[in-house]
Length: 297
Picture 1 (cartoon, helix red, strand yellow):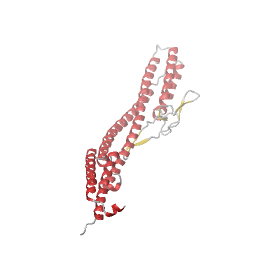
Picture 2: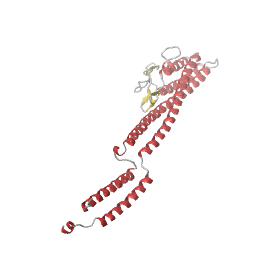
Picture 3: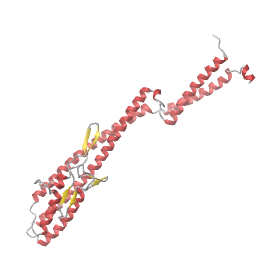
Picture 4: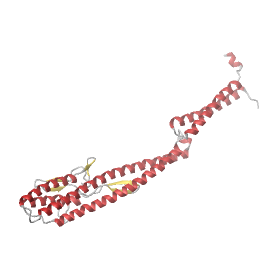
């Protein structure tokens, strides 16, 4: 077969373009840090990349939910600890007021302190996280504990639970039902802790004894039940969060292996391609001699 000058020129240009294409790919890998520019460069790797990236994004969403749930439960636990402290203080005051040595004046003074504790408990009942009331059930936009004209409280919250998804097909309630503590008493009457404390204060103001420590103890047990529930959910969220963090790290590393370029190898390849390109230009200058047409231009 006769080899013409045009055939040599065309072959040289094809080879040169191939080298330039390799250099372009290496340059993209160097500047972006990624292996492939288009899905067709590695169809299997592209599918794996989308799968792993989707898993990481979904895990981040679960972690965000777990963080929000942890914030709610941490604040709930702190609030319930304060309620327990108030109950202990009220019990001490009631025992002091129920002694035979207590006078009407001393009981009125104790009643004033109980009133301050009632106000504090109402503030706890209206605790907010991010502008949402955590004890109002699903009615998070309005304060659940509202004092009326008589000094007693009405409860605007409900017993609905707010559940968030912390993992695939796994949800956890992030709120505690404040109605069970602040609104429903052990006798079934709708007075709860707030109105119980208010009744104690009113009784002491008359100079009489408040002989209902048993009811106070039952209300304290309700608080402890809620604290136990909160603690169990906090532990579950902590375990789930740790597992999700490990899973995210694994997926991120796997994604990097599939998607990210080996920079050391890319630099080596680019240097090699650069040398080949320079050699090709030098060889082409010697092999592709000027033709008669070139002299006639």
